[in-house]
Length: 131
Image 1 (cartoon, rainbow, N blue to C red):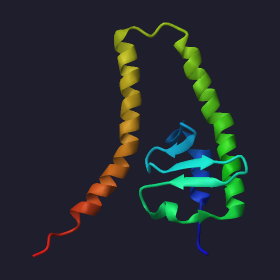
Image 2: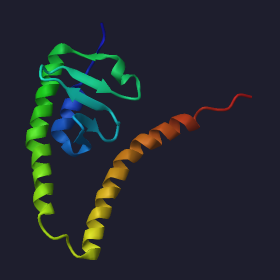
Image 3: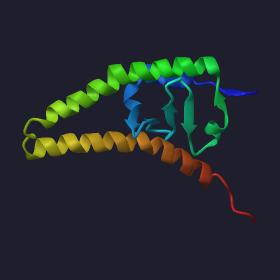
């Protein structure tokens, strides 16, 4: 039975943790929109709009991926959430500065999502109409 190789994802969790977020119990890769949920027994459930979700993760990689996720969560996500909560206890910055900070955050998210959208548009635009 063929399995999905999750080595690139484990590498991304370690090297570019900002490309992921944790929402409603699912680890979400922002750019690809792939979502992953981990059971207490380290089983990985994958949601994706493409065929990536059709293959199961190799059992030994499931444990490794779950360990990478727990490491990402404890070393990146939880501290980030604590920082956000801590910052929320203080008065927001004055007008223009806060606006620029918020705009930068939105721009960062938008740019991460654009690569996926551009790829989809390029695939659609290369299909020629029937003659």
